[in-house]
Image (cartoon, rainbow, N blue to C red):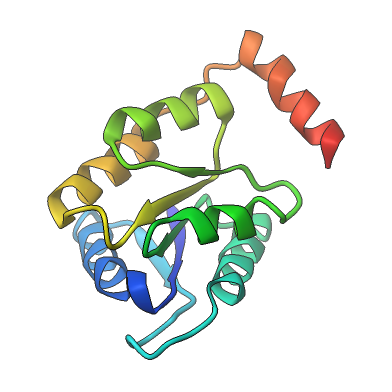
Length: 143
């Protein structure tokens, strides 16, 4: 599995933790930045992660202070379904019902342990299809 990950300055610390967490699970990680806590613009990193997902990464993970900016930016990208998830159940349902391909988390609102559980739930869940497939097709029509 290959996961593209990116953050702004507010999500940098949690991004670094999640990178290590994924690598310990033998998951390939592509870090598109940022690489410090120096102030940057979140849309730049949302775009980079989304491009990686569209070009073959299995999933993306984005982190900013609240997750709101990253989720807004990511959902502007075609073929991306980014879900802001603060808890594991949200992440599991985002995959199962919405076929989300980008997980967005809040670096200033989530502890590391909770973030790890949320990542696990997202990456281990599978899209259920069925009635949810019809809804995904309607989202694609909006694009």
